[in-house]
Amino acid sequence: TITPGTVGSPTSPMEDSGIGVYFTHTAPIAPGSSGGALVRFTAGGDVELVGMNTLVGAVGAISVGIGYSIKPDVIAKMLPKLESGQVSHAFSGMFLSDTTRANPYIFKIYPPTQKGIVVLQTVRGFPAESVGIQKGDMILKIEMEYNGAWQNITDPSASVLSDRIFFDVPVGTELRITTLRGTQELQRKLTLVAFPNRQAKSPRE
Image (cartoon, rainbow, N blue to C red; front, side, top):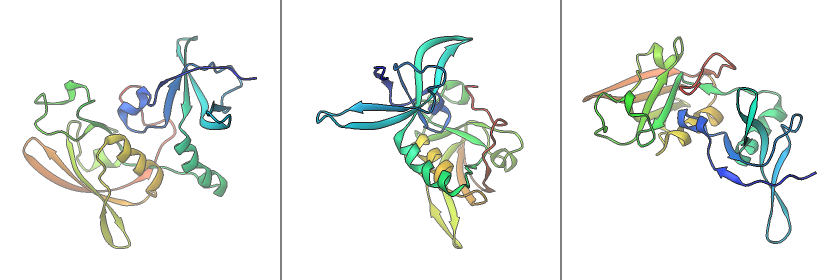
């Protein structure tokens, strides 16, 4: 069977705190259909995969008619890992946002004097908090140690940077992070750990 719907947004609220895995739509997701294909029909009559149904938006036990599907580029990144039988994701222990999207309450001075990527939150006991990174710090540069050399992996947006670390950078990689706090520029090193299943919550949870 096929149920119609429209894409509500190419992103989801979860993306405000880092990783852009989902997008939202109005096609119904019934119990048991999670993991099913979300498709669109092209002008030529072909069927194109646009996502995998995963979550249903709800207030308590009542559905609000919004579905969350995994983006096709995320599926493409995950397939090789699933096929290898080894799935792990790197985690720095901090959630990031673009300054233009972040809640003003995290800034000591608003609007911020510099636009870019800001730390929304650090998770207690994880690398970023352990090396002294704090909520409100601006990310100036992130470098990854690879084969004895430092490579700049800073991206122009928080979601792109978070996705890159989550999907592409191995657990155990050392990062060198340059931040700005007020007028003070600081540099710290941390080692990425495995992303926890349930322990680390985003600022929205």
